[in-house]
Image 1 (cartoon, rainbow, N blue to C red):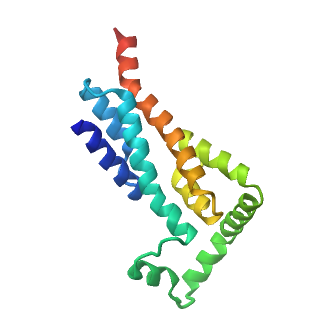
Image 2 (image 1 turned 120 degrees about the vertical axis):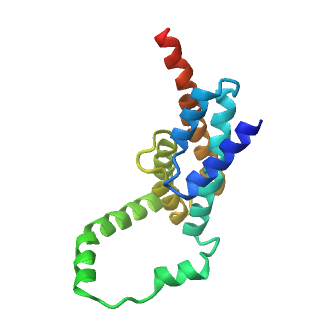
Image 3 (image 1 turned 180 degrees about the vertical axis):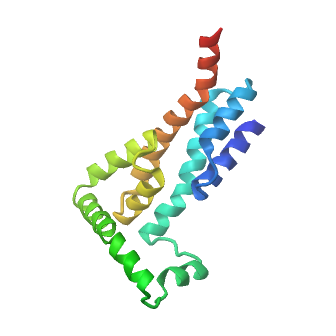
Amino acid sequence: MGWVLLTLGVAFGSAIVPLVNAELFVIGLCASQHSVHWLWLGGAVAVGQIAGKLLYYLAARGSIRLPKVLHDRLHRERPLTPRRVRWQLRTKVIRSKIEALRERCQRHPHWMTGTYGVSSLVGLPPFMATSVLAGMVRMRLSTFVAAGLAGRWVRFSLLAASPALFAGWLH
């Protein structure tokens, strides 16, 4: 039970701080600890990841407000320097594509559900980005949680089972 709770905490942390890698943690844990069932680990990671991504979803939806320090930093007026102008020109195409994608997702909510579901399972497009986009297009909370939990549980359960599968192939 202790390993499952630790996995839940690591998964929550990896959902908030992208530098923490839940995949490596799960593979390392399963390779060293054979007493923990892979379905329990998959479920713990799924719950932790969705709980963490829920914060991004709610912030993008506008349901929770960023801390004042972050909000002020993101929305303050900055002087236009030559470097900043170059950066704006370079990212103009990317920003227009993101805006077009957001509008398309709002027009076709089932398309967003499918994209988010695939992202939760495969990781492409990046799960963090689709979590934020789901909040921006106001995907239903129940759909966000259900699709995310299902995809993450399958992904991490298979990942947790993989060291045992490979060990069986080698012998």
